[in-house]
Length: 202
Image (cartoon, rainbow, N blue to C red; front, side, top):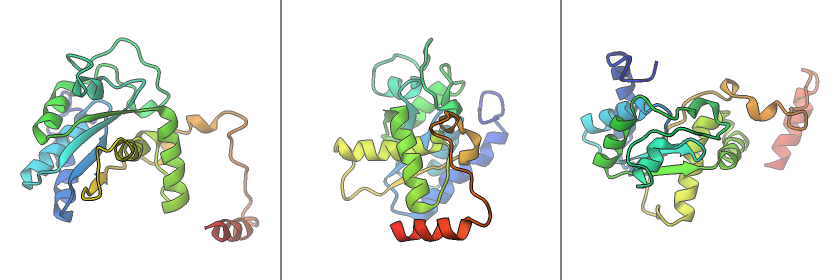
């Protein structure tokens, strides 16, 4: 369970995410997909332990963004009663580590970014198409937040943001369940042909 409220000792292992990012060097912002807030708190703690001054950015779906909205000043504390997102991994209207996440972001000089579901899905497609990485929409949401911040002028050419990609795309296939969105099945005999066609499009 990725919450300090219920598993404080187990979550210490997630600090390694922050220390490994810090070891890379030069990172200016770390974008963390945020649901309950536990992963963000651990990542920020790991960054701090490694004396990394990167700003920690909380990214949440706009339809369920209690932490991000608190950071933008829209809410006084991270808790909401209604939500509308379809990003299943981040449907936590009352995040158990919400207050700790808000404090971690603020102390790092970071901010919150609410992202539309559609932008998260577009980022999921972009990662799969250009990098061959199939992540769940909850993870892709962090990349969408980077793009949003670039477009709004919050990030510049001197910044070196890092995106934490959490879960595999098979964790959340909800967007593909509609009949018009289902992938076309492929037989093993068709794979070489399809692969050749895909490579020719690059």
